Image 1 (spheres, rainbow, N blue to C red):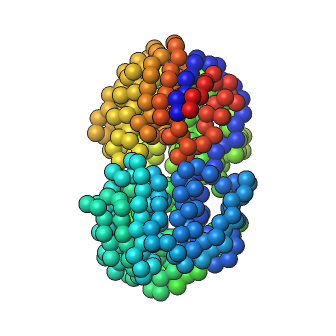
Image 2 (image 1 turned 90 degrees about the vertical axis):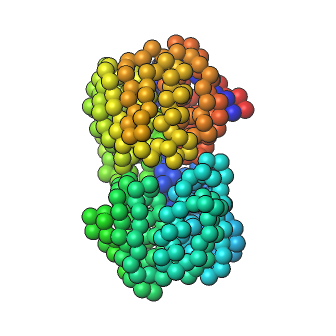
Image 3 (image 1 turned 60 degrees about the vertical axis):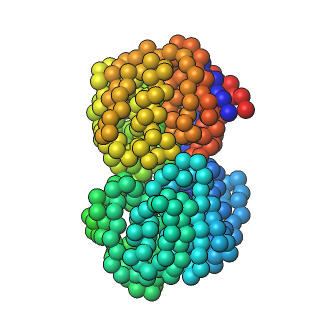
Length: 419
């Protein structure tokens, strides 16, 4: 799909998209809970749809309605092969849950997921009594349990997603578990996991993000759970407001544990006008100044921040970008390649991105690299370009934010979609 975007002035109110991160965790917990759970305000992104399909393969019965998902839970695998699509979180959570089974289950994926590492699953699940076979540390991965509790060591330097899978799976084991984690990244996402586990009646004891004690013989309880608004997707809308007009977003919690909430403090640093009223947040255009920030715990902010930096006065430095190499694309390289085509002075290093602004943004034909966040970044920057920008592979937004281009139209962005 191609999307052509022309210069626009934006204004309006949008409801925040639902968090696909919270949705996938809630689906996994509802699977583990015997009985009927309701997930309100669901995400129907591609990642969330894959999570629901994997849960069905592991025994859940799921009814999808416009405003809620009804899950009849109970872990009873009925498939020998499950499909995670391009979801790194889904692959890691459901690989661990598959290892609870005493027969082989294969987890396979597609696209960029085929080059994203899962070797940590092989190393750790083997410690816990499971049999694991990967394709040289990549998908597909085959697992066979049963898992056994006890002491386990986890490398958290690449991702916190595998730890999330363990925290969901281990409470139902007969024995207690103690997880020792080295160099954990994206700690707020672990807070999100534990909060959702608590709602489903599960206890986890977090000792300074270095040790997690998981009592065994716990039982998930079915609940009604509302998915919160997604700060990752909404960050693009806030940057759009800061560079091209004003945007108000409803349905976000400023008390969220989602790490991308950091976008608000960064916008304030630049001088953007930010107004917060309960779950209603508005960002308006202003003269923007350069900033320095570390996104170690919120790497998904790199694309919208690179766009923001391109319109700021001075040199911006975005640190903590090491893990961008193993996203849906090599995200640092993708940003440098495509934003440069539009006139942005941007350099990507192993541990940081530097942007010199403000840039004069020009029209170009650019590519999403199959990466939903690159596609969204290109779209919001196109709004201030001197001539039309054409984005190829724009359908990649469906991975996390299917209504993205529809929301841009509501805000006044001039765009045309060609299938």
